[in-house]
Image (tube, rainbow, N blue to C red; front, side):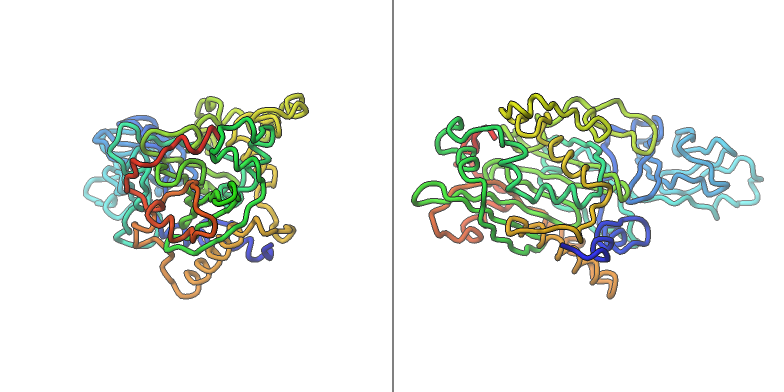
Length: 435
């Protein structure tokens, strides 16, 4: 468990908070590139507790400006995307993507006042269908992280965004907790119905696991071991990278390219970006876990909303739950990601972790919290640069499962398989099974 002070330290992300300051050291996924069209409508973007307006000007440049016009505070959401900048409709002041005031038509030209006014603007870069922004203090931002799912020149590269209710950390902790899978997601399935010798079979035969957790340059990783016969073990390996990236274990280690970002909109809402490259296997991402998203609205929390949510109890089917069969039968909730969202959202906006009773299966959760606390305290007290800010290669990681001989050192045995941007044509993705 954490003290209430520690919990506050690593969950709050608004301007001036210790965790918020740490996250602003990194490039942050802000939008999908498809959200902003050339000379199209401005978009409200809530990010790290700040109200921002995203737009793409007529020349294709993406801007992310503070909501309030620096003149009199009117919202730039109502602005005209006019040529090479966003024009406030109150008095006509126009700002380009860098926040420069490029037109001030209600003031005499000779006053040159426009050169002394600038809107708060955060630099943006686009890569792999994602608009990234840097909200930190550096004049020259650090490099973007080397995320394999966001860097492949491939027609199969995909990115998906969806919003969830709840603090970013409790949603992220669901990604690094492996033993819930045999209950929440697959409690209605039987081992004997799975392909013999697959990961799916062994995951259902033994719903406990022995955990080994290590620190990595970018964060932390775990190996969860289950016996798989007399002479081998099934290892399920996953990774966390600062500040909010997870690489979850479904799939065969070495074949899975991509991961997720649990990006805080504010302390109580999270925008989730999943970036993958290559053809996905039966369960290598959040596919099959959603109904079609609801149409976007223009309010601050109107982007990428899902039909199943806390307001409708995630459309739980109690009859299905009583029957207890299939991937939705244990919980009565349709969709793996929605089952997770129901659990993490039901904890409340920010769960009070001082009330927890953690067990041995929570080893990765404990380690990630310790890493976050240490990094935030070092950054707060002495300005220590957090892990990964200046070293994009620490994000070159993969997760997944594999069989190893009984007693093998999983860290050494998987070193190459855990490296991104390496091809392993000898591996068989179907070994994972259907789960």
